[in-house]
Amino acid sequence: MFKSLNGSLIPNSLRGPLLIETTGLPRFWITVWAFYSMKDLADASQIKQLRYIEQFYTFSEQLKGSGKLDDAITDVNLEILGEILEAYFLKLQNQPVLNRSTQIKWQAAFLFIQDTILRLTKSNFPSARIRSIESHLNRLNLLYQQLRLGKRRNQEILRSLPSSVVEALYSTLDPNSSQNPFRNIKTRWRVFVIFIVLLHQGIRRGELLLLPTDAVKSGFDKSLGRDRLWLTIVESPYGDDSRYSKPSIKTVNSIRQIPVSELTSNIIQEYIENYRGKPNHSFLINSQHNKPLSTETITLIFHKITSNFPKNILKDLENRTGKTTISPHDLRHTCAVVRLNQLLKQGDSMDEALQKMRTFFGWSRSSDMPRKYARAVFEDRLASVWNNIFDDRVAILRAIPEALK
Image 1 (cartoon, rainbow, N blue to C red):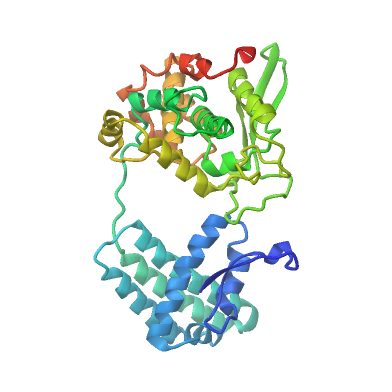
Image 2: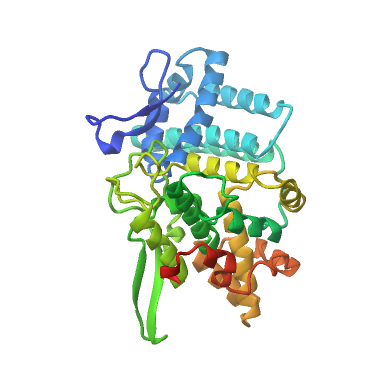
């Protein structure tokens, strides 16, 4: 059973998701494993991993009885563990639909057993026994590496939003637009800032929700001979996050500084000064209840936006992306395609452009993500939306009060 351990009397280091038995006690070995292996993962990733392993525990109870999986781990009974793993694999293999989620469920179960056994034996067993156990686990690993639950389709291209959809987003989310589906002016500005920052800065949803009110920094750039603005993407330093599913930085490469235009900075500042309110937390995006906005709410916001689109716009969206609803990550895809297109048009080689993309979007040097966008730029379906630079758009300027222009 899945529970969340929270409360003022519980130390911060012990708070978070937890698996418990029907007796109400924590499942022992998964609790130990989670403490060592998942402490650096985002809350959402921890929850996903624990739900996968809970399914493995439930299956083992049906197969061997309550508590038998933890007993087999404690006894380092590789015969019983091998039987449970093999049976679980066959169960997953025989499902009517095999997809990436199925594969991840299997990997989570196997790695949990492997990591726990290795950690347990290295501190409690003689060296000869440890070598025997490691050899057995290696044989299991080699066996199951050959048993693939399903092949993942490689997506040749990550689709950006078509120009008609982007144009519709600009016009619909203008805070002064009669087409805006949100009634409250504060909500309209909140959604407008979310849209602008996600699209123009290409950041992830979780990164957006971690931004503090002082995320935009400024300083004099000697090489440019003028002031410049940048957005700092980093874990929140304030420690006032009350959300159940806490957003987090995805990887160490995600910690970065990216340039921000003066106009985008002004939009953010207008929201902070006049529409954010005065909540008792430091996060930029504030909910209507004066709480840090949740990831689930952002998803619902884009569902509502899409549901108010005309049929011809929805048809363009489906024809282009195969989807009927816009997600926050679609804006990151779109930003990546446009940014790469801009870099190539200004004369950068493909290699130079891709390296700049890695820095801007927070990808590691070995990540293949930049190249997945390379083909999309040549389709050039977004040319009618931008004149190379995002902030030249009249649709954005219309949404800014005269005092900010």
